Length: 103
Image (cartoon, rainbow, N blue to C red; front, side, top):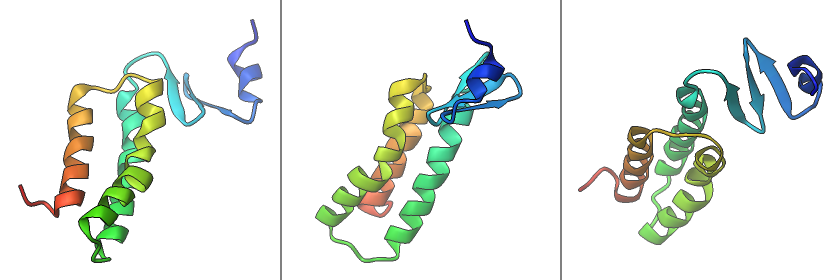
């Protein structure tokens, strides 16, 4: 079995302090769900700020939410464990974007 340093020479793998990043997901020992969740969350918030400046119709916001915001989380949610409160944050983020924060 190859060592982590040998695997780190691969372009898809980045070794950082006992953890490594493979295809955009942090892997290693311990609870890494917060690391896997922060980057897509910040990207989604930045995307939403840009799209909120445009006055989109509801169908356009649905397309943007599915294409540019929800897609940021698909790989991470399918690859590693995400806590239920993090899924709730994603749902609230999408609802706020779709409905402009109105209930």
